[in-house]
Length: 87
Image (cartoon, rainbow, N blue to C red; front, top):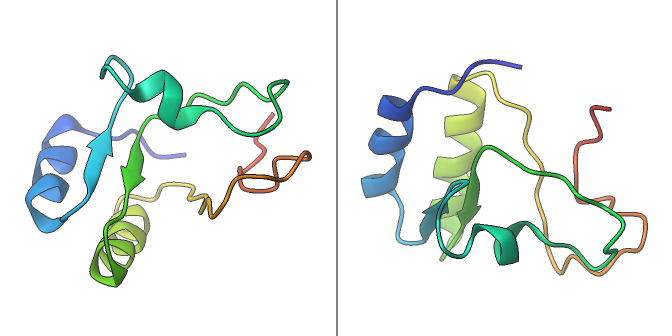
């Protein structure tokens, strides 16, 4: 997985209508939680997309930066299929 630079994140923010959430943000812990409380993934970046354009920008950002990408819809799957399992 590629190392994500803060400058890249700062370039993503103005391209979105939604929010970019990172570790240390006040709502990070709530944003990363899933239905199955036994799953404790801590993504480097969470994007709360507001529209289709945000989704496109986020997928392109992940591709351009060589990042693994997980797309979370409702997040109500006990097996936590919405996450890329790397461990």
